[in-house]
Amino acid sequence: MAAAVYAYATHIDCLDGLAAVGHIAHRHVATRILREQYPLIGEKLLQAMKDVLQDAATEDVIAAWAEAYSALADIFIQREKAIYTQENQDDRLTGAK
Ligand code: HEM
Image (cartoon, rainbow, N blue to C red; front, side, top):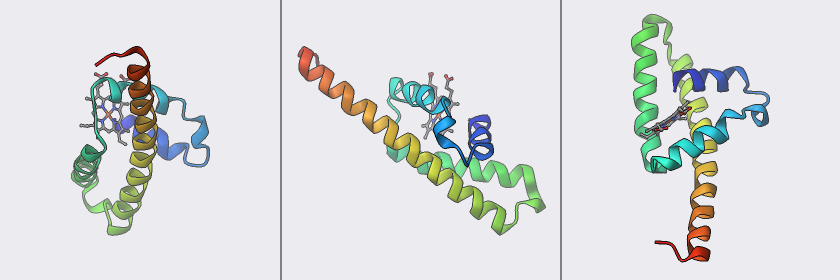
C-alpha cells in the first residue's frame, strides 16, 4: 500500500497513467472494502509516516500527505463505487443474489 501511495505521489501530474488503480480497485471490491474504511487507513498511514520521519514530519509535510491521501482515497472510492454498481446491475440481469 505504501508503494502504491508513493507511485501516486510520483505520478501526481498524470493520474490517468496510473493503471494500477483499476487493478487495486478490483482487489478491494473482491474483498468488500467500503468507503467508510478509508479514513481509518489514512490515519494509520499518516501515523506510520510520522513514526518513520520523526522530526522531518513537519506540520506542512503531514498536511500535504493528508491531502494527497484524501485525493487518492476519493479516486479509489469512486472507482470501487462504479464496480459495485456494475456488479449490482449484472446481478439484477442474471437474477443472482
Ligand atoms: C488510498 C488507499 C489505499 C491504497 C493505495 C491501497 C493499496 C492497495 C494495494 C497496492 C493492494 C494490493 C493489490 C494487489 O493484489 O496487487 C491492496 C490490497 C488490499 N487492500 Fe488496499 N489500499 C488502500 C486502501 C485500503 C483500505 C481503506 C482498505 C480497508 C481496510 C484496504 C484493504 C485492502 C485489502 C484487504 C487488500 C487485499 C485484497 C486481496 O486479497 O487481494 N485497502 N491495497
